[in-house]
Length: 219
Image 1 (cartoon, rainbow, N blue to C red):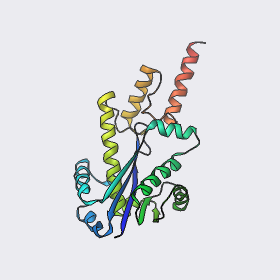
Image 2 (cartoon, helix red, strand yellow):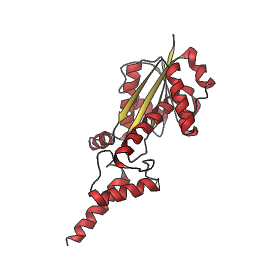
Image 3 (cartoon, rainbow, N blue to C red):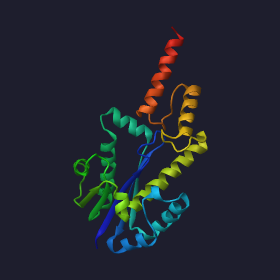
Image 4 (cartoon, helix red, strand yellow):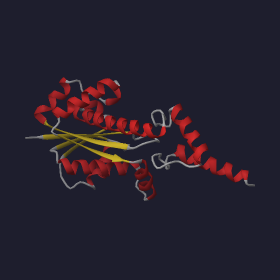
């Protein structure tokens, strides 16, 4: 029996909350069921439709796995010289090693798929066929399935965080609500919590400006 795996992520460019890497494993004979239920790249789905598909995937997939990378882990990895592409390759390889597919379809995050393949191979203890492409989540239903798993998990994490700290929008730096929330938080607390990615330029600039302002006040 041939088993295929799709790997994708959600929250890569966010400044608030985790990056989620998801693996969706299916028996190849069942792959057609993904197309039948209308699986597609999670970015093309409404919130309602994505939730419905997420439930259906639980009955179709052989296995699935999530790797949750916190903002704090992203920051500490960067301090250790591990960039986001390498960190994502490490987490994706953990999924592949755990689920042991015959073939793995993966959305490439490096500028070239070949470069990302090199990162992955360094961390693999199994030897599946690797199909690594840009926009794999739009091309392969099993990667679309993984994108749905990742997006739903990220949405759940963000929803829980908002219950504790209030509405901050999408958590992406281009979101005006997110920018407003971060500015207000910094003004009130003089620093950012661990669920904000301190290593992001958006944040380091804000912190730098705040420090400079405080220094000028004491001149």
